[in-house]
Image (tube, rainbow over all chains, first blue to last red):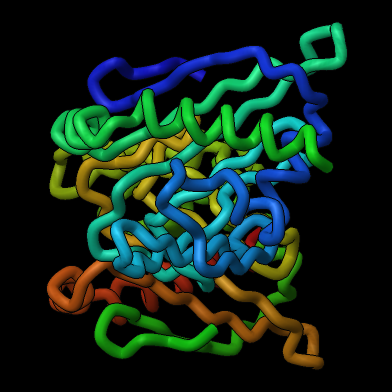
Length: 154
Length: 154
């Protein structure tokens, strides 16, 4: 994938857990709740239909306020690639003002771990900038830390 | 699929040709050129990578002016369902200002023909209205007539 520095945000980290475990965490509602938002924010509910066009709906609780987020999966390649977006809800209904498309790429690092690349693609330079200012790198980085910590308890 | 009268445009027609033939016409660049825009407008080029996330790029010629249109497929169920949009280009790069998502549903009519449902979903009431005023029903209807006429020569 050719990144566009004007509209994309992306980072790559090597995680000490296997791609299959990362995949399970990212695609199972019961697991999602444990890492998907930086604590002390939390996930109240998560509803997943893991197929292309299927729903990925969550309700976050941020500073006591519920924030529903509805989306769909665009690409589902088990253990390797997960793409989702808020640009659609189920049935390919376009959202009025989509924020981003997230692409998670998982590769084995050859030592039992995972080379984890998370990319957020945006419609405009402004949205990318807003996302960076909201704390993309810190936030998505914390999510990965939480994922690893949680996965190790499984 | 639940239609939303505020943002969707849709019609259903029964065509006297088989779903497999309709499918071939809709997914083959050499065929697309013969029906995809109402004549005398034409298609200068068509580039297809028929898979989820793959490109569906065309260059139309309208009143002598070239109009490139880039998009991707969201769903590809051979002989049954084709979903494409200009909301992304390849690599899931979000388009700044997407116009619509098109859903083509094909079902056998039990007599060798096809029950053909074409749906255009939009982000807003305004876009839906603009599309209707641009002549959605006439235009997409003419495209179907041209498709049937062309398919019968194959």
